[in-house]
Image (cartoon, rainbow, N blue to C red):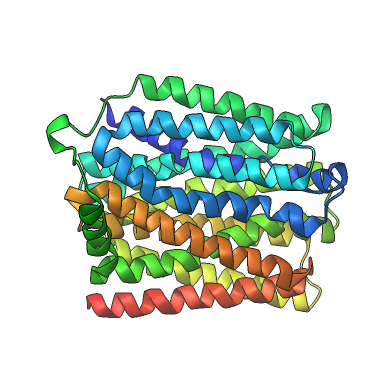
Length: 389
């Protein structure tokens, strides 16, 4: 299997959740009107999705270690498509949230199993560099999703957005069919409840993995609070839905730039050092956004430029946190990947849901919270870097 095609497949699988969230952003306010629901309740479609994603991570980690990577993906995509179908016909916000929960639950197969597939084939710096390549392909989701979401929402209504996600699951099902299995039968683990607990404990008690998983909760909260507030911030700054979709796609190009930088720097610096330098950029960007917001200097284009810089740095942090967490756990890569996702997605979702109600759709409040948690992430990475010295 050629590395480029393998990385492309993993990148597209990893982008399922980003695509499933970003494609919905242009239609959030329309969903609020269509279902006669508050904006805050519609914003919950993002953290609810991610909460389910986190809850299902251990299941798919255990499943993929037991029956293989490909069968686990097939099961997950089936659950994901069922959730998308529920969303297409949702008559109320409660049913929509239930469908999003199912979507997120099924989508957990993608990050858990694809990261494990990469770990099956690589280790050390090559593991981190392959994860960086996959993350470059991952950027296709955030770049294309808002534009597609806007076109569908504008021409056929917000329900058409979820219909497209049903089609996406079918495309990825076919793609998985042509992928090779990376976990040979002799390496599969018939786990008991006791062995599952032992593996999970080994991951979360490992000094390196434990610290990085805690930081992953903060980093996930940072990106989710931006995603759930992005349509509102742009609306507050005077941008229409069409302009928002276009500018959001421009912001996502920063992911590609960041991963090109990441791939090159990993040949010179350690993954934790790259993550730390990226966290400095994230914290500085968040500080400038807050200052511009409170001084009424924040404009649509300034915000877009600053979030482009944020995106160019954020995934340097997240992808290297993943690699560093998985690195010590070659024999239990599925469990290590699932534990990372379980805690990061649940912790980040709860943080984003809390901030959605704290900020009350006010850009100034959001900017302060965004800066605060960015500084918290920087402080945590600083401690880890010092421990490596």
